[in-house]
Length: 420
Image (cartoon, rainbow, N blue to C red):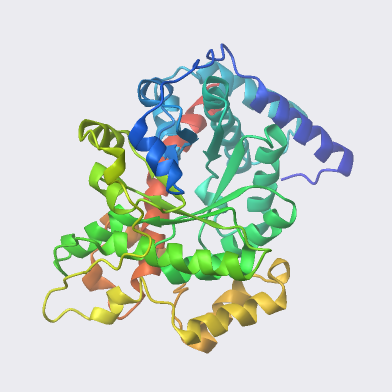
Protein backbone atom coordinates (compact mmCIF):
# COMPACT_ATOMS: atom_id res chain seq x y z
CA UNK A 1 0.00 0.00 0.00
CA UNK A 2 1.25 3.50 -0.77
CA UNK A 3 2.63 5.35 2.23
CA UNK A 4 0.38 8.15 3.42
CA UNK A 5 1.50 11.44 4.88
CA UNK A 6 0.16 12.63 8.23
CA UNK A 7 -2.26 14.97 6.49
CA UNK A 8 -3.52 12.15 4.27
CA UNK A 9 -4.04 9.93 7.29
CA UNK A 10 -6.12 12.66 8.88
CA UNK A 11 -8.20 12.94 5.73
CA UNK A 12 -8.63 9.15 5.70
CA UNK A 13 -9.96 9.13 9.25
CA UNK A 14 -12.32 12.00 8.44
CA UNK A 15 -13.62 10.18 5.37
CA UNK A 16 -14.19 6.90 7.22
CA UNK A 17 -15.97 8.73 10.01
CA UNK A 18 -18.22 10.47 7.49
CA UNK A 19 -19.04 7.22 5.68
CA UNK A 20 -19.58 5.28 8.90
CA UNK A 21 -21.74 7.90 10.61
CA UNK A 22 -24.09 8.47 7.67
CA UNK A 23 -26.95 6.00 8.24
CA UNK A 24 -29.66 6.20 5.55
CA UNK A 25 -33.22 6.11 6.87
CA UNK A 26 -32.38 5.75 10.57
CA UNK A 27 -35.07 4.04 12.65
CA UNK A 28 -37.23 5.94 15.10
CA UNK A 29 -36.66 5.59 18.82
CA UNK A 30 -38.49 2.81 20.68
CA UNK A 31 -40.60 4.85 23.09
CA UNK A 32 -41.27 4.01 26.74
CA UNK A 33 -40.71 0.24 26.73
CA UNK A 34 -42.66 -1.74 29.30
CA UNK A 35 -41.05 -2.90 32.53
CA UNK A 36 -40.63 -6.60 33.34
CA UNK A 37 -40.67 -7.53 37.07
CA UNK A 38 -38.43 -10.59 36.66
CA UNK A 39 -35.81 -8.65 34.71
CA UNK A 40 -36.09 -5.84 37.26
CA UNK A 41 -35.26 -8.37 39.99
CA UNK A 42 -32.18 -9.50 38.06
CA UNK A 43 -31.12 -5.85 37.84
CA UNK A 44 -31.61 -5.52 41.59
CA UNK A 45 -29.37 -8.55 42.11
CA UNK A 46 -26.59 -6.78 40.19
CA UNK A 47 -27.13 -8.24 36.73
CA UNK A 48 -27.31 -5.97 33.69
CA UNK A 49 -29.39 -7.54 30.91
CA UNK A 50 -28.07 -7.09 27.38
CA UNK A 51 -29.90 -8.42 24.35
CA UNK A 52 -27.61 -10.56 22.22
CA UNK A 53 -28.89 -9.63 18.78
CA UNK A 54 -28.29 -6.91 16.26
CA UNK A 55 -31.57 -7.61 14.49
CA UNK A 56 -33.56 -4.44 15.08
CA UNK A 57 -37.01 -5.94 14.53
CA UNK A 58 -36.30 -8.90 16.79
CA UNK A 59 -34.83 -6.65 19.47
CA UNK A 60 -37.84 -4.31 19.34
CA UNK A 61 -40.28 -7.14 20.07
CA UNK A 62 -38.33 -8.21 23.17
CA UNK A 63 -37.11 -4.87 24.46
CA UNK A 64 -37.98 -3.96 28.05
CA UNK A 65 -37.04 -1.07 30.30
CA UNK A 66 -34.54 -3.29 32.13
CA UNK A 67 -32.45 -4.00 29.02
CA UNK A 68 -29.37 -1.80 28.98
CA UNK A 69 -27.32 -2.74 25.88
CA UNK A 70 -27.13 -4.85 22.73
CA UNK A 71 -24.42 -6.82 20.98
CA UNK A 72 -23.71 -7.19 17.27
CA UNK A 73 -21.59 -9.75 15.47
CA UNK A 74 -20.20 -10.62 12.07
CA UNK A 75 -22.85 -13.31 11.53
CA UNK A 76 -25.57 -10.66 11.59
CA UNK A 77 -23.51 -8.26 9.48
CA UNK A 78 -23.00 -11.01 6.93
CA UNK A 79 -26.76 -11.59 6.75
CA UNK A 80 -27.34 -7.89 6.16
CA UNK A 81 -24.70 -7.68 3.44
CA UNK A 82 -25.85 -10.86 1.68
CA UNK A 83 -29.38 -9.41 1.46
CA UNK A 84 -28.07 -6.75 -0.92
CA UNK A 85 -29.73 -3.83 0.86
CA UNK A 86 -26.37 -2.15 1.45
CA UNK A 87 -24.89 -2.70 -2.01
CA UNK A 88 -25.10 0.94 -3.11
CA UNK A 89 -23.73 2.21 0.21
CA UNK A 90 -20.83 -0.23 -0.07
CA UNK A 91 -20.07 0.81 -3.65
CA UNK A 92 -20.11 4.48 -2.66
CA UNK A 93 -17.73 3.78 0.23
CA UNK A 94 -15.38 1.85 -2.06
CA UNK A 95 -15.29 4.65 -4.65
CA UNK A 96 -14.60 7.38 -2.12
CA UNK A 97 -11.91 5.45 -0.24
CA UNK A 98 -10.12 4.59 -3.49
CA UNK A 99 -10.33 8.20 -4.65
CA UNK A 100 -8.55 9.30 -1.49
CA UNK A 101 -6.14 6.37 -1.36
CA UNK A 102 -5.62 5.01 -4.90
CA UNK A 103 -2.87 2.61 -3.81
CA UNK A 104 -4.89 0.83 -1.15
CA UNK A 105 -4.74 -2.97 -1.28
CA UNK A 106 -7.99 -4.87 -1.67
CA UNK A 107 -7.51 -6.48 1.76
CA UNK A 108 -7.20 -3.10 3.47
CA UNK A 109 -10.12 -1.75 1.46
CA UNK A 110 -12.27 -4.65 2.67
CA UNK A 111 -11.29 -3.91 6.28
CA UNK A 112 -12.38 -0.30 5.88
CA UNK A 113 -15.69 -1.20 4.24
CA UNK A 114 -16.46 -3.81 6.91
CA UNK A 115 -15.89 -1.12 9.52
CA UNK A 116 -18.36 1.19 7.75
CA UNK A 117 -21.01 -1.55 7.48
CA UNK A 118 -20.64 -2.57 11.13
CA UNK A 119 -21.00 1.06 12.19
CA UNK A 120 -24.23 1.40 10.18
CA UNK A 121 -25.74 -1.68 11.85
CA UNK A 122 -24.69 -0.55 15.33
CA UNK A 123 -25.82 3.04 14.85
CA UNK A 124 -29.26 1.90 13.79
CA UNK A 125 -29.51 0.10 17.13
CA UNK A 126 -28.28 3.20 18.97
CA UNK A 127 -30.88 5.32 17.17
CA UNK A 128 -33.67 2.87 18.03
CA UNK A 129 -32.84 2.13 21.66
CA UNK A 130 -30.48 4.86 22.86
CA UNK A 131 -28.23 2.36 24.68
CA UNK A 132 -24.70 1.03 24.40
CA UNK A 133 -23.91 -1.41 21.58
CA UNK A 134 -20.99 -3.83 21.55
CA UNK A 135 -19.38 -3.76 18.09
CA UNK A 136 -17.16 -6.33 16.40
CA UNK A 137 -13.69 -6.03 14.91
CA UNK A 138 -12.70 -7.89 11.76
CA UNK A 139 -11.03 -11.18 12.86
CA UNK A 140 -8.18 -10.54 10.41
CA UNK A 141 -6.72 -8.03 12.89
CA UNK A 142 -6.92 -10.40 15.88
CA UNK A 143 -3.13 -10.88 15.97
CA UNK A 144 -2.21 -7.34 14.94
CA UNK A 145 -1.90 -4.94 17.88
CA UNK A 146 -1.55 -1.80 15.79
CA UNK A 147 -4.57 -2.47 13.55
CA UNK A 148 -6.70 -3.60 16.48
CA UNK A 149 -6.06 -0.36 18.33
CA UNK A 150 -6.54 1.70 15.16
CA UNK A 151 -9.98 0.26 14.47
CA UNK A 152 -10.92 0.52 18.14
CA UNK A 153 -10.05 4.21 17.96
CA UNK A 154 -12.16 4.59 14.83
CA UNK A 155 -15.20 3.04 16.49
CA UNK A 156 -14.68 5.23 19.53
CA UNK A 157 -14.45 8.34 17.36
CA UNK A 158 -17.80 7.53 15.72
CA UNK A 159 -19.77 7.20 18.96
CA UNK A 160 -17.77 7.36 22.21
CA UNK A 161 -20.92 7.44 24.32
CA UNK A 162 -22.52 4.26 22.98
CA UNK A 163 -19.93 2.00 21.32
CA UNK A 164 -18.16 -0.77 23.26
CA UNK A 165 -15.47 -2.43 21.11
CA UNK A 166 -15.12 -6.21 21.11
CA UNK A 167 -11.51 -7.44 20.94
CA UNK A 168 -10.83 -11.20 20.73
CA UNK A 169 -8.72 -12.90 23.39
CA UNK A 170 -5.45 -13.58 21.54
CA UNK A 171 -2.00 -12.81 23.03
CA UNK A 172 -1.92 -9.67 20.90
CA UNK A 173 -5.48 -8.96 22.02
CA UNK A 174 -4.33 -8.64 25.64
CA UNK A 175 -1.75 -6.07 24.55
CA UNK A 176 -4.19 -4.20 22.32
CA UNK A 177 -6.78 -4.02 25.11
CA UNK A 178 -4.22 -2.48 27.45
CA UNK A 179 -3.36 0.18 24.86
CA UNK A 180 -7.01 0.87 24.05
CA UNK A 181 -7.95 1.17 27.73
CA UNK A 182 -5.07 3.64 28.18
CA UNK A 183 -6.94 5.74 25.60
CA UNK A 184 -10.16 5.27 27.60
CA UNK A 185 -11.84 3.26 24.85
CA UNK A 186 -14.58 0.98 26.29
CA UNK A 187 -13.63 -2.64 25.61
CA UNK A 188 -15.54 -5.92 25.66
CA UNK A 189 -12.74 -8.53 25.74
CA UNK A 190 -14.47 -11.38 23.98
CA UNK A 191 -13.99 -15.12 23.35
CA UNK A 192 -13.11 -15.97 26.95
CA UNK A 193 -13.64 -19.51 28.21
CA UNK A 194 -11.99 -19.74 31.63
CA UNK A 195 -11.56 -18.00 34.95
CA UNK A 196 -7.80 -17.86 34.45
CA UNK A 197 -8.09 -16.13 31.07
CA UNK A 198 -10.28 -13.47 32.64
CA UNK A 199 -8.07 -13.14 35.72
CA UNK A 200 -5.12 -12.33 33.45
CA UNK A 201 -7.23 -9.95 31.37
CA UNK A 202 -8.50 -7.98 34.36
CA UNK A 203 -5.09 -7.76 36.05
CA UNK A 204 -3.14 -6.98 32.89
CA UNK A 205 -5.44 -4.75 30.86
CA UNK A 206 -8.57 -3.93 32.90
CA UNK A 207 -11.10 -4.21 30.06
CA UNK A 208 -14.59 -3.00 30.84
CA UNK A 209 -15.95 -6.51 30.28
CA UNK A 210 -14.71 -10.09 30.01
CA UNK A 211 -16.72 -13.12 28.90
CA UNK A 212 -17.32 -16.78 29.49
CA UNK A 213 -19.02 -18.40 26.50
CA UNK A 214 -20.76 -20.86 28.77
CA UNK A 215 -23.07 -22.62 26.32
CA UNK A 216 -20.13 -23.75 24.21
CA UNK A 217 -18.37 -25.13 27.29
CA UNK A 218 -21.35 -27.30 28.13
CA UNK A 219 -21.45 -28.43 24.51
CA UNK A 220 -17.76 -29.31 24.20
CA UNK A 221 -17.97 -31.61 27.24
CA UNK A 222 -21.20 -33.31 26.15
CA UNK A 223 -20.39 -33.53 22.42
CA UNK A 224 -17.02 -35.12 23.18
CA UNK A 225 -18.62 -37.51 25.70
CA UNK A 226 -16.54 -36.25 28.61
CA UNK A 227 -19.74 -36.08 30.63
CA UNK A 228 -23.27 -34.78 30.27
CA UNK A 229 -21.98 -31.18 30.05
CA UNK A 230 -24.37 -29.96 32.72
CA UNK A 231 -23.14 -27.00 34.78
CA UNK A 232 -19.69 -26.76 33.15
CA UNK A 233 -20.24 -23.30 31.69
CA UNK A 234 -22.17 -22.17 34.75
CA UNK A 235 -19.39 -23.29 37.09
CA UNK A 236 -16.74 -21.52 35.00
CA UNK A 237 -18.79 -18.32 34.76
CA UNK A 238 -19.32 -18.12 38.51
CA UNK A 239 -15.67 -18.90 39.24
CA UNK A 240 -14.63 -16.16 36.82
CA UNK A 241 -17.14 -13.75 38.36
CA UNK A 242 -15.60 -14.32 41.78
CA UNK A 243 -11.96 -13.81 40.74
CA UNK A 244 -12.81 -10.73 38.68
CA UNK A 245 -14.79 -9.27 41.58
CA UNK A 246 -11.92 -9.97 43.99
CA UNK A 247 -9.50 -8.17 41.70
CA UNK A 248 -11.64 -5.06 41.33
CA UNK A 249 -12.31 -4.96 45.09
CA UNK A 250 -8.58 -5.16 45.86
CA UNK A 251 -7.41 -2.84 43.08
CA UNK A 252 -9.36 0.34 42.40
CA UNK A 253 -7.72 0.67 38.96
CA UNK A 254 -9.57 -2.47 37.82
CA UNK A 255 -13.20 -1.98 36.78
CA UNK A 256 -13.72 -5.19 34.81
CA UNK A 257 -17.19 -6.75 34.86
CA UNK A 258 -18.04 -10.34 34.03
CA UNK A 259 -20.35 -11.30 31.16
CA UNK A 260 -22.24 -14.59 31.07
CA UNK A 261 -22.26 -15.09 27.30
CA UNK A 262 -23.49 -17.74 24.89
CA UNK A 263 -26.52 -18.57 27.02
CA UNK A 264 -28.70 -21.37 25.75
CA UNK A 265 -31.78 -21.29 27.98
CA UNK A 266 -34.00 -19.32 30.31
CA UNK A 267 -32.92 -21.64 33.13
CA UNK A 268 -29.35 -20.34 32.83
CA UNK A 269 -30.61 -16.82 33.49
CA UNK A 270 -31.96 -18.12 36.79
CA UNK A 271 -28.93 -20.21 37.77
CA UNK A 272 -26.50 -17.36 37.01
CA UNK A 273 -28.47 -14.53 38.64
CA UNK A 274 -26.09 -12.04 40.22
CA UNK A 275 -23.41 -12.23 37.52
CA UNK A 276 -22.49 -8.71 36.40
CA UNK A 277 -23.89 -8.95 32.87
CA UNK A 278 -25.97 -11.33 30.78
CA UNK A 279 -25.81 -11.22 26.99
CA UNK A 280 -29.12 -12.94 26.29
CA UNK A 281 -29.99 -14.45 22.89
CA UNK A 282 -33.63 -13.91 21.90
CA UNK A 283 -34.44 -17.63 22.22
CA UNK A 284 -33.23 -17.74 25.83
CA UNK A 285 -35.08 -14.54 26.73
CA UNK A 286 -38.33 -15.80 25.23
CA UNK A 287 -37.97 -19.00 27.25
CA UNK A 288 -37.31 -17.00 30.43
CA UNK A 289 -40.38 -14.87 29.73
CA UNK A 290 -42.56 -17.93 29.07
CA UNK A 291 -41.54 -19.39 32.44
CA UNK A 292 -43.21 -16.40 34.17
CA UNK A 293 -40.88 -16.26 37.15
CA UNK A 294 -42.02 -14.85 40.44
CA UNK A 295 -39.40 -12.16 41.16
CA UNK A 296 -39.32 -13.22 44.82
CA UNK A 297 -37.90 -16.61 43.83
CA UNK A 298 -34.94 -15.12 41.95
CA UNK A 299 -31.79 -14.96 44.11
CA UNK A 300 -28.10 -14.43 43.51
CA UNK A 301 -26.08 -17.57 42.78
CA UNK A 302 -22.66 -15.93 42.60
CA UNK A 303 -21.48 -17.97 45.59
CA UNK A 304 -22.76 -21.24 44.13
CA UNK A 305 -20.36 -24.07 43.29
CA UNK A 306 -22.34 -26.21 40.87
CA UNK A 307 -21.33 -29.88 40.59
CA UNK A 308 -19.89 -31.17 37.30
CA UNK A 309 -20.00 -34.88 36.49
CA UNK A 310 -17.25 -36.16 34.20
CA UNK A 311 -17.04 -39.59 32.63
CA UNK A 312 -14.64 -42.24 33.88
CA UNK A 313 -11.26 -42.10 32.20
CA UNK A 314 -11.48 -38.42 31.33
CA UNK A 315 -8.48 -36.26 32.22
CA UNK A 316 -10.33 -34.23 34.85
CA UNK A 317 -7.58 -31.62 35.09
CA UNK A 318 -8.09 -30.66 31.42
CA UNK A 319 -11.64 -29.57 32.27
CA UNK A 320 -11.07 -28.38 35.84
CA UNK A 321 -8.47 -25.83 34.73
CA UNK A 322 -11.38 -23.92 33.20
CA UNK A 323 -12.51 -22.80 36.65
CA UNK A 324 -9.23 -22.95 38.59
CA UNK A 325 -6.71 -20.12 38.90
CA UNK A 326 -3.70 -21.61 40.63
CA UNK A 327 -0.83 -19.80 42.36
CA UNK A 328 1.59 -20.38 39.50
CA UNK A 329 -0.79 -18.76 37.04
CA UNK A 330 -1.35 -15.81 39.38
CA UNK A 331 2.42 -15.40 39.67
CA UNK A 332 2.77 -15.22 35.89
CA UNK A 333 -0.07 -12.70 35.66
CA UNK A 334 1.47 -10.46 38.35
CA UNK A 335 4.89 -10.54 36.71
CA UNK A 336 3.41 -9.50 33.37
CA UNK A 337 1.34 -6.76 34.99
CA UNK A 338 4.42 -5.43 36.78
CA UNK A 339 6.13 -4.95 33.40
CA UNK A 340 3.40 -2.54 32.28
CA UNK A 341 0.87 -4.04 29.89
CA UNK A 342 1.04 -1.21 27.34
CA UNK A 343 4.70 -2.15 26.73
CA UNK A 344 4.09 -5.85 26.13
CA UNK A 345 3.82 -7.78 22.88
CA UNK A 346 2.21 -11.09 22.04
CA UNK A 347 5.69 -12.60 22.04
CA UNK A 348 6.20 -11.45 25.64
CA UNK A 349 2.99 -13.17 26.73
CA UNK A 350 3.89 -16.39 24.94
CA UNK A 351 7.36 -16.38 26.51
CA UNK A 352 5.95 -15.86 30.02
CA UNK A 353 3.41 -18.62 29.39
CA UNK A 354 6.18 -20.96 28.24
CA UNK A 355 8.42 -20.06 31.19
CA UNK A 356 5.70 -20.72 33.78
CA UNK A 357 4.34 -23.76 31.89
CA UNK A 358 0.81 -22.45 32.11
CA UNK A 359 0.03 -23.47 28.49
CA UNK A 360 -2.45 -20.68 27.86
CA UNK A 361 -1.11 -19.70 24.44
CA UNK A 362 -0.51 -22.67 22.13
CA UNK A 363 0.31 -20.76 18.92
CA UNK A 364 -1.60 -22.95 16.48
CA UNK A 365 -0.04 -23.40 13.05
CA UNK A 366 -1.97 -22.32 9.93
CA UNK A 367 -2.70 -25.99 9.20
CA UNK A 368 -4.05 -26.50 12.72
CA UNK A 369 -6.20 -23.40 12.40
CA UNK A 370 -7.77 -24.82 9.24
CA UNK A 371 -8.43 -28.12 11.03
CA UNK A 372 -10.09 -26.30 13.93
CA UNK A 373 -12.16 -24.20 11.53
CA UNK A 374 -13.30 -27.32 9.71
CA UNK A 375 -14.58 -28.89 12.93
CA UNK A 376 -16.76 -25.85 13.67
CA UNK A 377 -17.62 -24.13 16.95
CA UNK A 378 -17.19 -27.30 19.02
CA UNK A 379 -13.76 -28.90 18.46
CA UNK A 380 -13.03 -32.62 18.39
CA UNK A 381 -11.18 -32.73 21.68
CA UNK A 382 -9.32 -36.01 21.07
CA UNK A 383 -7.16 -34.24 18.46
CA UNK A 384 -5.90 -31.72 21.00
CA UNK A 385 -5.71 -33.38 24.43
CA UNK A 386 -1.90 -33.40 24.49
CA UNK A 387 -1.50 -30.30 22.34
CA UNK A 388 -3.47 -27.47 23.97
CA UNK A 389 -5.46 -26.56 27.05
CA UNK A 390 -9.23 -26.53 26.66
CA UNK A 391 -9.72 -22.78 27.23
CA UNK A 392 -7.11 -21.90 24.61
CA UNK A 393 -8.58 -24.42 22.17
CA UNK A 394 -12.09 -23.04 22.66
CA UNK A 395 -10.90 -19.47 22.10
CA UNK A 396 -9.17 -20.48 18.87
CA UNK A 397 -12.26 -22.44 17.81
CA UNK A 398 -14.50 -19.43 18.39
CA UNK A 399 -12.16 -17.16 16.46
CA UNK A 400 -12.04 -19.60 13.55
CA UNK A 401 -15.84 -19.87 13.50
CA UNK A 402 -16.05 -16.07 13.30
CA UNK A 403 -13.69 -16.21 10.33
CA UNK A 404 -16.10 -18.48 8.42
CA UNK A 405 -18.89 -15.89 8.55
CA UNK A 406 -16.46 -13.06 7.97
CA UNK A 407 -15.10 -14.75 4.84
CA UNK A 408 -18.62 -14.83 3.35
CA UNK A 409 -19.08 -11.17 4.32
CA UNK A 410 -15.74 -10.26 2.72
CA UNK A 411 -16.48 -12.24 -0.45
CA UNK A 412 -19.65 -10.20 -1.03
CA UNK A 413 -17.71 -6.97 -0.64
CA UNK A 414 -14.99 -8.18 -3.02
CA UNK A 415 -17.66 -8.95 -5.62
CA UNK A 416 -19.00 -5.40 -5.30
CA UNK A 417 -15.46 -3.98 -5.56
CA UNK A 418 -14.91 -5.95 -8.76
CA UNK A 419 -18.23 -4.72 -10.21
CA UNK A 420 -17.26 -1.04 -10.01
